[in-house]
Amino acid sequence: MIALHINIDHVATVRQARQISEPDPVTAAGVVELAGADGITIHLREDRRHIIDRDVLILKQTVQTRLNLEMAATEEMFGIALEIRPDIVTLVPEKRAEVTTEGGLDVIGASNIMCDGIKKIRDAGIRVSLFIDPQEDQINASREIGAEDVELHTGCYANAKNRAEFESEYQRLVSGAEFAHKQKLQVNAGHGLNYINTQRICSLPHLRELNIGHSIVSRSIFVGISQAVKEMKEIIILNS
Ligand code: PXP
Image (cartoon, rainbow, N blue to C red; front, side):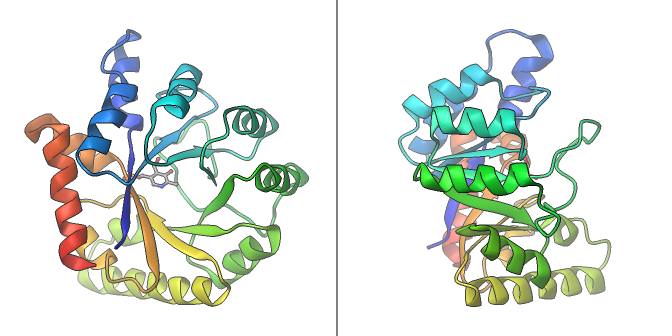
């Protein structure tokens, strides 16, 4: 079955709006695990706009499933990952002015910092995933640089403006998933997935994990976070 990793960044976004201690993403992680999440994903951004260092430290000790740390490929972040040792490190591109992660990582133009960092992370026994657009050249480069997983960026699919665009973005993801699997990379996907567009994504070939955040945290305002997780799990179970 496809695993559901829940990105709890936006629980921390609400906390940081007041710069106080609630709602605590650590509590959210425990509750979503009890509701059936297969993993917890957090993005420690360079500007610490939502998840902060204290969250990463405590979550490493409390997460019972798997902790996936999303981060930029910088020396600071590689240092933190090597100290904390999450189960998975997902490298993402990061721009200070963006509202959320915009495009996939450019692995073809990987810096020396990225290449060395990936090697150190792998040597420490941590799984490395790269968040990329579903392009063959980026997938090839991901394999060559030593990634075990690729997370295919579903943002263009999620933002498609009409049926034709939706179909063509879906087909790009299908081709990317097939190609990544042939390259012996584990296929994951995420970004912009919600209670409507996740159904189709579940039929992507070789898909192993989904990372979903904003839509689940948004729904939890109305139905509670456990129910929001259960409803997403149900979509995955019915469509896997
Ligand atoms: N995967 C990656 C690599 C991301 O950067 C994000 C957003 O932080 C997500 C998945 C989750 O996206 P969303 O919040 O739109 O579900």
